[in-house]
Amino acid sequence: MAEAATGAVRVEKVRGRSALTRCFARYPLKLIAPSKVGPASCDAVWLYALTYGGGIVSGDTISCTVSVGDGCTAAITTQASTKVYKAVGSKCSEQLLEVLLEQGSNWSLAEQMQEYNVIAMVVLLGPKLKSMQELMQAEVRKLMSGQLRPPTSGGSLYTMRSQPPPRPQRPPLIASCSPFGRTGTGMVARVAAVSTELVYSFLRHHLAALEPFLGASPYAAS
Image (tube, rainbow, N blue to C red; front, side):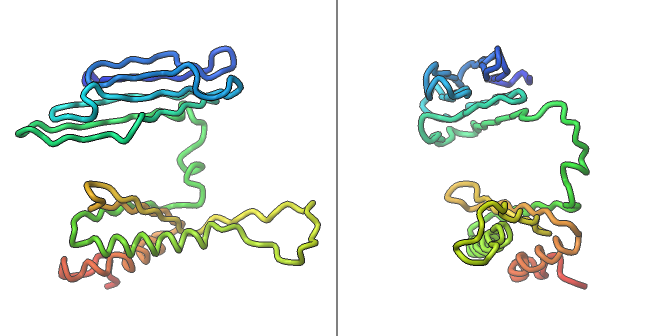
């Protein structure tokens, strides 16, 4: 754990149940672990993260590491939305969260990637690109909703239910878009595909609108 860390959490199996085995916090971070959140049969650890200033104030540095053991369940949240106050002078604030959800995996990188051989990430930032971001999010949402929808078996309403539903096939390309920043002025697009050409095709199509700003379209076919 780095010296700047203000919190450390560890959840491990104790007598067959998820248990909080370490809970350290120092100013400006405060961690609260309530003893009763759900029914006793629920095997989960709940943790609330708070700050003494009622939010992130100018100059605050919050860094927390979280380790969740195999077979454990943990929910880490806040009591309300985190407030970020205006900076005073040149004092900056930052909040870092590092989580170790899997330890000692026996899966190789190839096994984890499965048939996906190419990954890409695109960051679009600025008010001039707002309409482009919205269009890209809408198209990706439509693309993925169609590709990830399990196929229907067809037939009449009286088809025997003993037959298991067909398993959806993995699409050759998957993508997601996540807005970020104040008032959502930024967006991160993540892409994974089975081939380089599929990623290039995706980027050529969705980044073509940058040509008026850059003088050329990124990844345009030569």
